[in-house]
Amino acid sequence: MKKKLQVALDLFKTEDALEILEEVADYVDIIELGTPLIISEGARVVKTVKDKYPDKIVFADIKVMDGGNVVPKSVLEAGADMISVLAASDDSTIKGAIRIAKEYGAKVLVDMCSVKDIAARGKEIEAMEPDYICVHVGYDIQETGADPIEELRKLEGVSCAKAIAGGIKLDTFAEAVASPAEVIISGGGICNQKNRRETAAKMREIMDSYLQK
Ligand SMILES: O=C([C@H](O)CO)[C@H](O)[C@H](O)COP(=O)(O)O
Image (cartoon, rainbow, N blue to C red; front, side, top):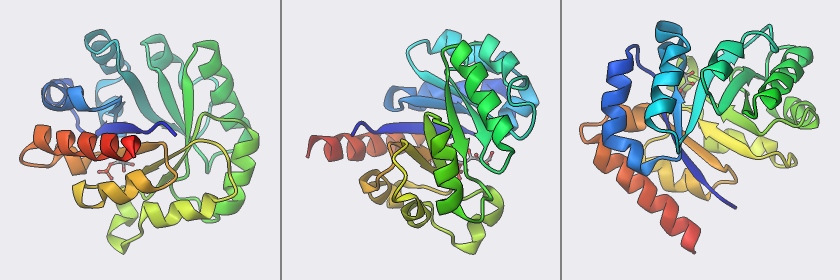
């Protein structure tokens, strides 16, 4: 299976995101423009980053909850390669987001953040054929100690490609890479570190050596 490293830029300013990308972009496959960044800077940040990094997958973490075929338009117009919609939203919202993303040749990640019955909702989401289902331990519950790698096991029977997020750092990275997830997402685990470049490089090395096994 291919594996991808995604850095989540959960910041407020485009300049700060670009500064971090100078340090880590060489090592990541997917650049996530985090929800706080998109809310703060709008779809403009998508265009700025895509223009600067045309070879990277640019993911706009817009976490759509309603208006699935409307809300994503601005980031898709700006060049996003992938968008997110919440699994907790209505099926019609998810289907709408998938439909409009397809029109723009983009992918959709369905974020399972706050879904109580991951196994059951996972089956329903799989039938809608998104590109990824993301098991995500959100910021507000990370202090409960919930572990996205553990949570991912609840999707065992689901064949859709998976992503995991929520507090993944260098010390849990190898375990995350060895999990069935194709995309490993790390925000604070890279961006809040003293030496971001070194951290991202180590994550890349862990992923690449796992893939060579
Ligand atoms: O999606 C995220 C969160 O809901 C804030 O918008 C984060 O990007 C995701 O949790 C990854 O960040 P870390 O948990 O800091 O690794």
